Length: 299
Image (cartoon, rainbow, N blue to C red; front, side):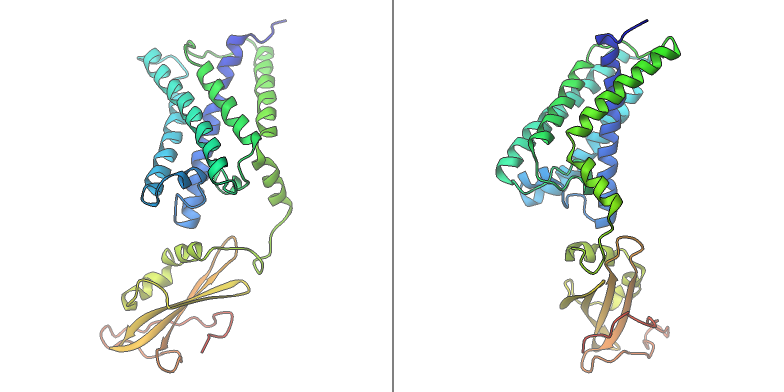
């Protein structure tokens, strides 16, 4: 009966590293689509000046996705396999090595910041387990340098042995990952929206991507809201506006639900605070008002 040799263990690292890189990139993109900001909550960007945080977050996400796909595409026999595979694997090792160093620095300078490795799941402060995981992945990446093209297992029994080795390593990585426990907690608990902590910046990002915002954008006269307040599961945002050459305000109500976040809007007179039902004379089109904002508007 065959046993797993060092060569086979090294081959297992390629799909494992590719999955980790693509999962990390995908989790960051999901967070970016939800919050409207790629660098929000991405721990290592805190080490850079404010103006460089967004470019660095984009670069890291692109590098992760590119290296993950590169590991898959160069695993088999292809033209220029040796040079391409070596470049991708060296780059993967350097990425995890730099990540380990960056996490050490982040832990010392920003002890409360999460690593941001897997988007919303990586909010826990950087710990020794997080550092050990990054170092382990760096060693695994460097171990793949010099491997010949990966070939299918000769027998089904040997394939099961490879899967067993891969599963054992996944268990080790899971034990070093704080994200696993956080994911299990989230699966068993849904935080009520009334007490859910949602930053105002995230609410504004959701608002600016909504249809009501695009509908009333031409009437808005200010770049920042004049008032923002929260009531239970809704956050209200008030922007200055001009309606029929008269001062007005547009009140947006943004739901704080985790999914299917609704956005309502109402155009009100700047002096009285009453809804304005009449259509603009310039366009001759009525501005639709929501039947209900869920709560009464603030006077």
